[in-house]
Image (cartoon, helix red, strand yellow):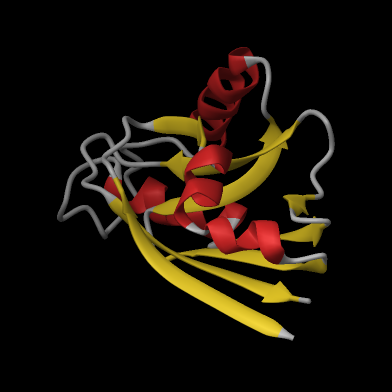
Length: 140
């Protein structure tokens, strides 16, 4: 069994949902050497998240952003944690709903995603800086 791990810093993305599959693969080319295994991606932040969904039609990502903003609105009077602005607490809630990591099978040196699937960075802040990811590939 082989293990490969790399920590990368993504450039700043605007608020919204962004496909980062190619960025992940470019950062850890050792994935190509694994016949059977798993890729795990972890985000080291509490106001952004990761998920897997539609990679072809960008309107899906736009709809995600609109829906999340309805589910978790800003400026709610019961939020106490507002030190960094009105998007701060909603960003933490959205990140907890979606999660801080995803796993994808590796088969014959490629991510074994469905034809329409991609890995998303879900940026929940209006003015976030770059985000740190830990990418770990394991397999034979």
